[in-house]
Image (tube, rainbow, N blue to C red; front, side, top):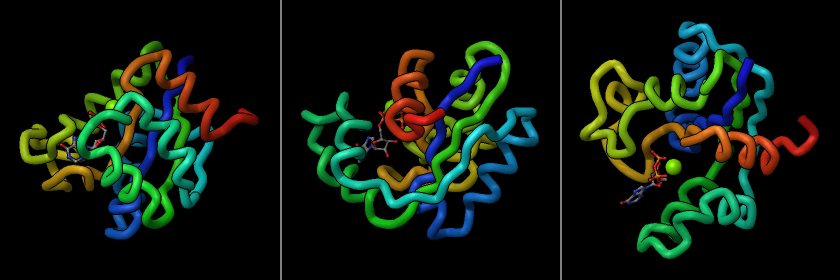
Length: 135
Ligand code: IDP
Ligand code: MG
């Protein structure tokens, strides 16, 4: 079995869509290993989004992801679970995301695109360690 990291971002919790997102992951056959509603602090957010530090939207992104509690998840599935979850989540820009995906069905804009999901096996490992160091 393999694991990946998912965040139901503040917009998902605010809109009451965290359950819908968890349900989609579970219906796919993935299993919850950890789940915690947590207000992400600015330092952790900056570390998490380190790869985007030089992007013009970095400040907006950190403010968004820290604005209210997010639902942090570790999910378990077959090899390369990260890629299964990314397929369910859809393209970064919800306007371009395919219908049937979480972003394609339920969101319209960035940065409020409902979900973060690790984009590789190494990102999954790094992000699980950052948010759930005890796991
Ligand atoms: P991903 O979440 O699909 O992996 P990334 O390119 O890693 O997409 O970007 C991280 C997050 O930054 C996105 O999910 C979105 O919330 C936000 N974001 C991406 N591009 C923009 C932008 O052009 N303006 C504002 N926010 C953005
Ligand atoms: Mg990314």
